[in-house]
Length: 255
Image 1: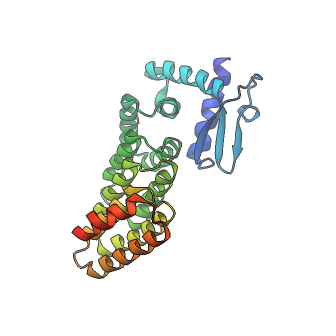
Image 2: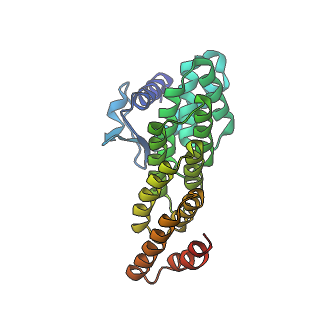
Image 3: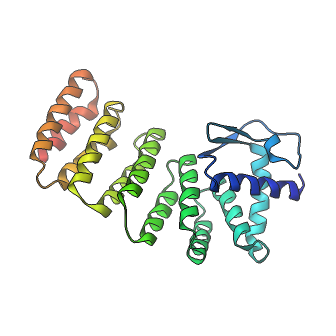
């Protein structure tokens, strides 16, 4: 595949991501055999999900790696595109996260980095490196607004849906909540997570998160009583789930 065609693919995909026209990227097992200068002819977009043929991404990865190594010829925009492709394939490459941090600080590109890292997170919902990068982004802004908190909590909910007992997702959720540390925020999240755990009674991580929220509420005696009643109700509906019994006997009783 010609490098010029590959570069057009990289430019096009990164443009879709930064323009928020796609929210996730998926590798499609089928291989594209017809190479043209128009990337639209061998990728697929459905409901903001981008599908990329595996052989196209493999070739793009090699191009991105070569250009990232020769960073003098890539420029900031080119390096941003290359590191995105590299992290899309392997999000555990710390050296390229560090490069993106450097570019973000130099160009004040926090808004773009927020968009890009969200796409990578939804593509790799259990990757600690991406959660850590988003925490770094939040620390750069110096504060956590309620609007931003809702965005982070929504991402945590999606990643928890994608990967059962996703420890990194729940830990990130708690970290974000502690940045604001307001009782009303804890109570709102308690309602959200209670609704979520009704649909996921086997995932103990949600129950552990509720325990965290209740422990942070200094005047949470009413919430604690409601929690106990809610657990009893869930046990009546799902008597065979060990997580419910364990939470009732070992967690709710210790609060």
